[in-house]
Figure 1 (spheres, rainbow, N blue to C red):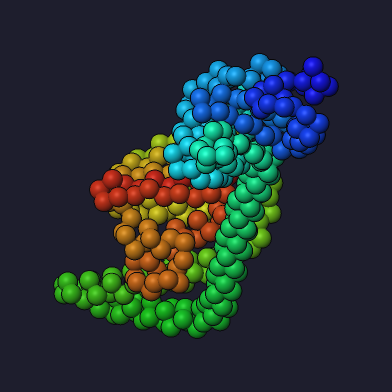
Figure 2 (cartoon, rainbow, N blue to C red):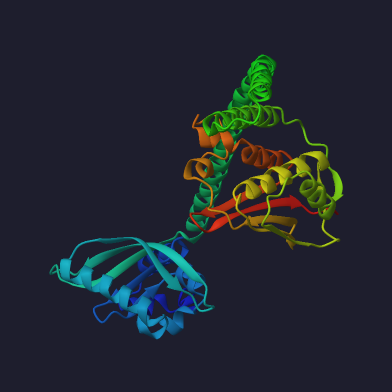
Length: 392
């Protein structure tokens, strides 16, 4: 036995006569090639394996010689290898497999790029297949890592882009509101002066005519009074919305906020109020802004029930938040008010103008790091949910 035979009987496995020095030299070259190499005969048995393939598969060469793929690999893998081998014998051409998987003796899976070449005898008949393998496992791992890194980068870029777009939209919105605030502040006094004059004139007319038997006169004076009050309220709501300042956060009990808010609301007869607010509900918020937000939402619910109904205010812990919910049994918000809650400048409809106090409530909540949701439907009432960070 030569010194090369100890590494797996390569020369005997070749089944070639005259194992001379030249053959030993060529066999040594094959054995020292870094890439795994194998040779199979027409019965798909391994007849030559170099050191690299044995190292990759962690299988001794002597145990593989004379045996087939089905003796070592899972059936699905062995079936695939056999199909590619048959393709070489049938087509008589080189078959290149860009990517295939193989499981070694320890169960580790490798990703291979394999080239299978037909070997012909002197008569041109294919007698063997020579397989040259490139183990691209590390390359695939690197590619997958790179792909994942690219995906993560794309995700981060997308998130950052969305954040920048949101910040830009918020900035533009704040600039628009600043203009509205300046404009509203500049003209509020001038608008309220004629409104006051109209109100006073209507009052003098009422005093002059006294108790009038003409119902049209009485009704007209009442309409003037209501519309002046409504116009003044719209101006107040617009100023409140446009002049939201930076929140000054501190710990405050939700029960205190709710009771203070309820105290500022005029309740029509027939409105029933239910409270379920725990004394341990403590949030970190701006007291004045949170109170105004809750007041505006309660006001909106009460105004939706002029003929009476049920108002329910609750507070419940939800993870890092305290959820304050205000629900009513009114007819639900008009579609244009619900859809335009975030941006009062998107529409100039009368109903949206009358919903400014709800928009102010939402803006005040979000201004101090809270979250706001509204659920409303025709004849299903409205439910406002305010999430404020819990204290501590």
